[in-house]
Image 1 (spheres, each protein chain N blue to C red):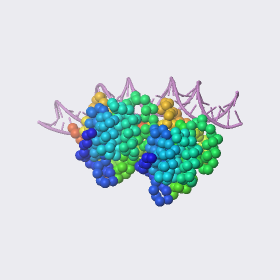
Image 2 (image 1 turned 30 degrees about the vertical axis):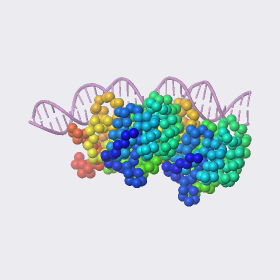
Image 3 (image 1 turned 180 degrees about the vertical axis):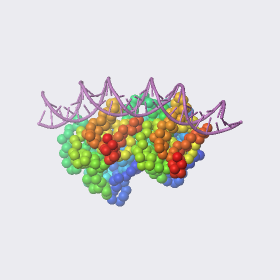
Amino acid sequence: MTITSPRGRTEMHRPDGSPVRVLVVDDESSLTELLSMALRYEGWEVGSAGDGTGAVRGAREFRPDAVVLDMMLPDMDGLAVLGLLRRELPHVPVLFLTAKDAVEDRIAGLTAGGDDYVTKPFSLEEVVARLRGLIRRSGAAAVRSESLLVVGDLTLDEDSHDVTRAGQSIHLTATEFELLRYLMRNPRRVLSKAQILDRVWSYDFGGQANVVELYISYLRRKIDAGRAPMIHTRRGAGYLIKPADPAADARR
Amino acid sequence: MTITSPRGRTEMHRPDGSPVRVLVVDDESSLTELLSMALRYEGWEVGSAGDGTGAVRGAREFRPDAVVLDMMLPDMDGLAVLGLLRRELPHVPVLFLTAKDAVEDRIAGLTAGGDDYVTKPFSLEEVVARLRGLIRRSGAAAVRSESLLVVGDLTLDEDSHDVTRAGQSIHLTATEFELLRYLMRNPRRVLSKAQILDRVWSYDFGGQANVVELYISYLRRKIDAGRAPMIHTRRGAGYLIKPADPAADARR
DNA sequence: CCGCTTCCTGTGAATCGCCTGAGAAAGCGG
DNA sequence: CCGCTTTCTCAGGCGATTCACAGGAAGCGG
């Protein structure tokens, strides 16, 4: 098993102050690497394993607070792995990775204990968001962080998916929602189109990079329409969101 | 016997503030695991046993506030187990698990003492609800939590199964009732179709996921018909219930 | 001010997810 | 055993969503 330590900001901690630990189990090394990078960046400590045997060993040695588990492993059935994991770590919430077309009844019962799943191909934002939700609700994180993101007079609730600006409710589509969440989780910070594409769109997205521009445009229409703008373009660099400058409104 | 502690929100407590304890007895480990997960998520401490002998030992050592007991155990008759349990824990309420075709009048006699039963295959919502009822009525829980769920002008009584909106009584079928209860126990929270399926339908349900859509549609006809809607679709994410926005009514 | 690059956004097509009517099958009460 | 209720499948339909494309606008360096 490989263990890597966080390098970014750590918002969630365990009761003793150490970073949250996540075990990633997938047989495609490109995916475990992708996930490890993203989760480490989230401020978590990441362990990874490529099969069921490694997963059990990882659970025993690494004692993670959450597990990301691919249901398709080379050496054993996903449910079998789950059973063994549960024996080691009865409390740990599990985020399942499943193929889109996988028979849905394989999932049956899995989310019942508070676990969750995402289908491949996924976006990193989605995985991170769900993992945060699982950890938040599991009580492993000392700070039972809020599900509400706030930037200026803009709010986004990850539980209800409600978005408001200045108290007014705003309807967003799924993609718009994920994009805004990503922006709001990184306020006052320039995010490049490449970063956004990597984070918000599925890892197998093969389309034109200007979808980002398009969706920024959609967001502006809904978020900034007729108000002091919060979404800003940094030409040649990317986009960022920040609380509206009150003077900007008067200036217009 | 295996003991696992709660990790979720704990709404019911014992007089000393510690979590309620439930002993699960079933010989199918997949079922004890499923139940353990769900009950732990409910905020309870769970012990489990796979046979009558283990059940008696569990009762003695774990001192549960309630027992979930499969009537079909490998080593002894359900009634024998019950007798031994009663010797250890005279007042503890028991939730029996029985096969659908089991002789019902035998069970009926058993439940006379305030116990209850559900037939296999069951839904987790049903088990949890009945267990909550048993515990509430047994007086083990310090907070004699209400049996009435309220969201906006919608009320649902878990004891009487009465549902009203704006004072008007509404008739629901069993499935509609369980679905609404699940929604109302998680107000303002998006619940995915998978979560709903796992929680409201029996664990062996192998049908199409769009039954959820269908029943949401039924509920809307009865709950939201001609009123400001309380049940909302989050396209690509799931459903949620919340108090009707009063402005929405005027807007329509 | 010019020309180049980058970004914005209207249009439209394809797809997706959701809603719902119709009806079969199973359950239930009398 | 019969009729009513309930559960569930199937499939058509439709609006919402996603995305490509392309012309126009805006910023930037000189």
